[in-house]
Image (cartoon, rainbow, N blue to C red; front, side, top):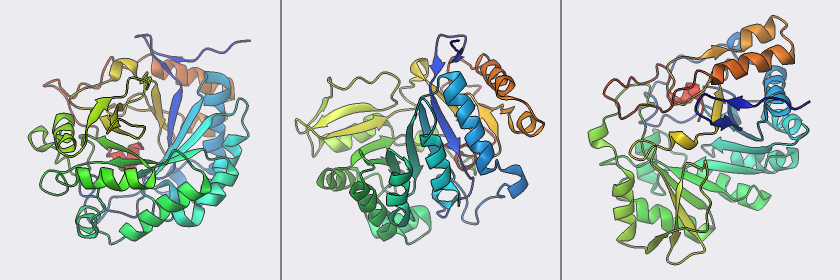
Length: 333
């Protein structure tokens, strides 16, 4: 019997599940959290490895999800990561499995993750300048990230994608340099507009580096043309051919050019809460019914009902917009 998917009232169907495995991180990026870190979730609050796999299985086998992205915090800090990936890869139908990471520790784990069934990685890297990296992340770990990228490429976790956020007055002049680095190594670079998801609630629209700003900086050095061969669909990035191609660069303009109408994503936090939107101010608990003995059918039904409450858009450009209480590290990208 066919199973109903995760449809909302506006005709969108969620097929891409972002699963946060931890809210902890080993960097302290200035646009994400304060230098001293945050109050991390306690172990009893976190989903166990078995619980993560159980909910992922419900999403894949009963709700039509066919893409799983493991995130954090920093998911490489999750001790059971390789096992979770391996068990996810055994599901039928097998989903596409990816990982968003800051790259620290990836050099040690890339091959094991590939062997377990991981398909590809997205690595966050905002600069290839060591001093700027230290200023942005408050850690001197650029060499580790570079090593992680190389290991991912060698292991076949391709295409290796690089996600970059530009901060005005910090790394906003380094966009061409970062693109040159990615082109030289065969990585796919995507610039992401800074979003109001920092723990300090210090985001200001006036200081944000916009998609138009980024395009202006890049076109001073490169010839960019829209990648007409790329079918964007629900993908968040606008793709551009660099100097005629075949290599490309992407721009994710979540703030200035929202793509909510094509959204196909849903999120599961590390403590078992369902979020129907990255910017949602409400969550729905799956951990409690899971631990109370709910069967897969009940969990799937609860999940479907959550999606029916999804709003038509994130509302960032509405005067009444309020930033989510949880920061990105606790939500999961």
